[in-house]
Length: 239
View (cartoon, rainbow, N blue to C red):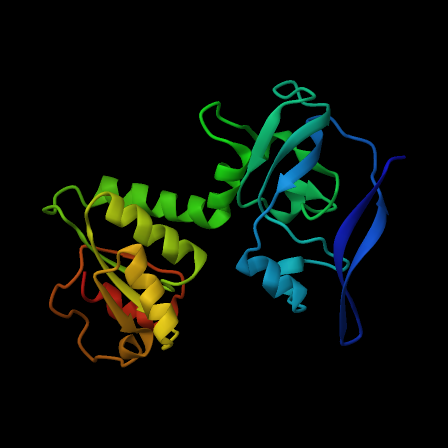
């Protein structure tokens, strides 16, 4: 069988290891493809797995990676052939083996899409799962807030993260007002958010004060949230 190398997270008792190991690739099953990745993002889910979060990894050992742009090397999938440039975002754990952070890996063809002709591999990889998530969120806003006057007032939490940053960029492309909430109080992070186009940057701690009222005065037309919890609950009272 073919061999590959992969970045592997493993846990023995309470010790977490992260190392580059050789792995035997199994034979392809019907509907699967073998892929050589060109690029992959580092997502928050990957960082959780590397820190030992079994809820993310599912089992040990675990090879991180939830998105990629690459090329098909072997195919048992009718829709894809060798040489196809392909990509995937937000891959589930059972959709890829041993994992994207490998020199070569196996993926289920149903999760794979061909690279569009009008975008380069590096440009698409730049968006990654974070950009994909922001795009989905913004598309839902466009569909569901059409009765509101433009520009929309959009609150974005976790604004300095991947999803938050792409959300700001997309919102400003359509000339909307962006109210960015960040957990970081550093001047550099605040400057970064303003450089993306945020109209106002606010400390997320101000949203963690619970109000007894179920509704508060309207301030926002939509919310893109990456954090959940009290901050989201308080924002929803103001939509």
